[in-house]
Image (cartoon, rainbow, N blue to C red):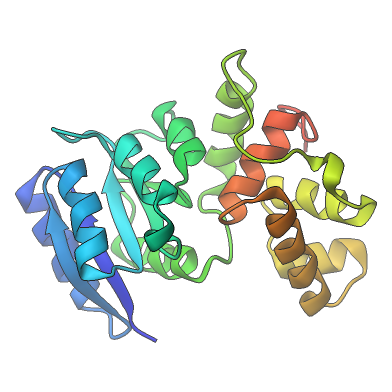
Length: 221
């Protein structure tokens, strides 16, 4: 399956460099380039992208608001957003996760890692950069301004709460299966059911719910 990628960055040279990299992968194609957040939203609709590589800081409409519009559009329900940022300590990343982003990378990531990240997010398998993500979540997400955007974990079974906790700590399905003594398929089923009950788009949103609800505490290992 070919991943249809839309690139959104206000710097032409950056977009062109990313385009050359993405086009070099046999399982990806660039379906558009946007210089503003508003263009990114419009092109996501027009070009039927599977994934948007989204810079945070852009004119007209920034990457966070563009992500929020994409996430709120039922016609774009299958579109994933991978946020790029200059620094992995940028608290805007947390706002992007709340808005509906599926993960993030810093801009100095190695080319092969960017391609792997696109594949990972497009497949919905795992949250990217689990270490930096956990630090950011712990630092910012439990602020007084944080308000859950989805249902809380009270609606989950005990097993689903365990699964949610492990997802929030960065474990993939295979690791969850090993921790809980389940088959990988059963673990995947639990993750899917948990997402459905919480109204979460993907694993990144599960992490947001886990921390905002207090199920996982900042600094928890």
